[in-house]
Length: 239
Ligand code: URA
Image (cartoon, rainbow, N blue to C red; front, side, top):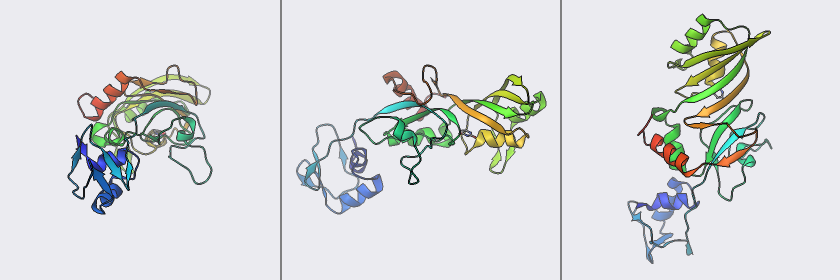
């Protein structure tokens, strides 16, 4: 059972809010009757019509993409830039769950499941995200401790993070950082705060999903068990 406006939105008619207006305007029928009640629920087997045409809900699809650099996390772009959605061939309208900066590479989920995406992006359900950063300069253990314990950014103190020094090369350091929150440009701002600007950033893990086997620009549908695990996460059942 689900609310009629949600069913209509999931079927690609319009946003949930707009669907409420369509219901109130008397443009929706359920099992042959015009419905103008917003609380109306529908279930499998109910026949829903909009403007005289039957409505079929879109199949929910989920993909994992290894985003290359120079691609933006948006549904469509008006300045002709390539978006993550352009990289995944699907008959449904996909959108990214959260965002990676244009220059950041790595994994991101694309789906048409608005409810799950909304929950996964909710601050209360922030999942582990693991990034590989190549940064300017030789980072000291004291500086890494600052990242671990929390650095002051303009939108507040960062939460404890797991931070490992993976290596150094002339003039730069490789650091792996695991965050449990997801603020805008957070990794770059954290390294700026300790005086080591990020040269390159790659997200290698999001919850239980990793970039293993995905070349840059490559994508794959999520497995059923991965979708089930994400759904549990989104409901806050596991952390
Ligand atoms: N943190 C950043 O700074 N950029 C990203 O793209 C993701 C996390």
